[in-house]
Length: 117
Length: 118
Image (cartoon, rainbow over all chains, first blue to last red; front, top):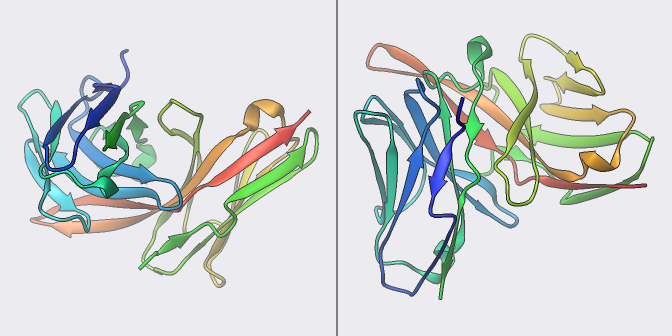
């Protein structure tokens, strides 16, 4: 069974540009969550999608958006990039989004390393 | 507002000894606590979890202890091995009820870099 796949693996952008990151969840998983990892801040929750609907959102500005398609694949978009957006962006999938309850596990991709110059 | 805190950015341990990683939380509504391990260039992987109604859960060399009154949990690794060297994240889950459905939201700590020396 293939794991969570994130593309691209690395991205270099300049300030003011926009970027789109892609995530393919494990087959059969309907919940996709996005996290931002920066040194000292740990994993910051961005948003969660389930059945093409955003169900949950973290405390990030509106420049961060996402969507989920009918095949559960998800994309995350960041517009008007700032230097502080440089981070590792991780996508995680789970069957139904219980996130640890009922023995459900969250599976992470390897992430997209975004550098904003 | 950091609801889950790992106050030790790093920990260095000798092979064969015990590694103790700590995590503090503030929200009494958290119902599950999880530990994830992350190697460089890889995504975090699930390690062990504990329900808020328990105070201990063990899986091989890994044991998680929960002290609800102190809002504190710890991960013990015995004996520590060089392959355990990684970043460890604790996470806490809260139940969210919206629109007639129930799902979870995880809050992660900042992570602790564990280095196990041979």
